[in-house]
Length: 348
Image (cartoon, rainbow, N blue to C red; front, side):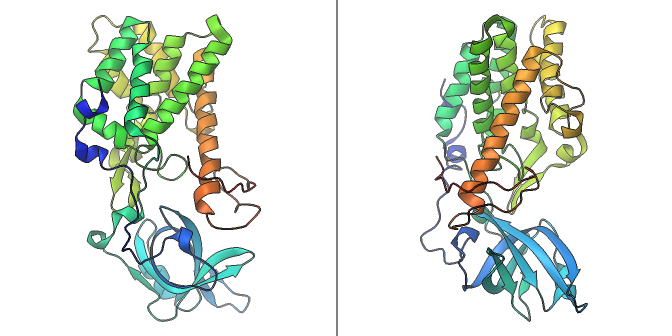
């Protein structure tokens, strides 16, 4: 079975976003010191501060699909703070300057900020897509299912990934996060396959110490709840209401339990092990798992998931957030709790 048999050409056309030749407004990655710019950006954070003289200024972190940049409103801070909301898209007019070796936008006086209505947002500015070949990724996922020796697990995975075309379309379009890693269309598919490949490699290393079928099934299903946790809006990736209220771990356990109930005589102990992999894959309670990994397969899955997400974060900082710069070190990243040495790698 091919991905083209399960999804429409319109869905596959969502990938491979390219910049339009006629597009004049720059992206963050285009900005250079001294440029006068008008640019549409999404608000990541905002903070009112004061100068030593006691004058207010508004510090913003803004981003598009190519990266993030700081912007400062020295002139109309109070007014701007009132109209700017986190998550909204604003049009910023100003000049790019360099402060402490970092680019920032000094916002113009008088109407330097305006809010863009939702129906006027250009979605392609805020939503990127995996650069990997989506049909090939899905083919790899299906190969894992085909290689599953446990008949119950194979039927479970087959029913999830090949029987419901609507779900498959949602799955391949889904991001794996809103900001941290694989935060783009196809990100969940890309991450899922990478984690399964890591688990396969580790399983070969440790042989009989690991139940390969359980481990690979857990890898393919560990983030399945993210299909319902996130939604793609014109201004980027947001949490759905269900995602905010339940979270992908809870959603994933419910989803898999429902599908397992449709498999005749699915063993309760086997289902319990798969649910444990989903529940514990974050590894620590403070990282969002309600339970710690308590099987060999669970600790392997956690390590593989963590490794792929961390490497993705490093690569995304190197290739996007600081694209076009000659800085030796990145900005401090609050998710990684560190700066990283820049390599200026190209996306692959």
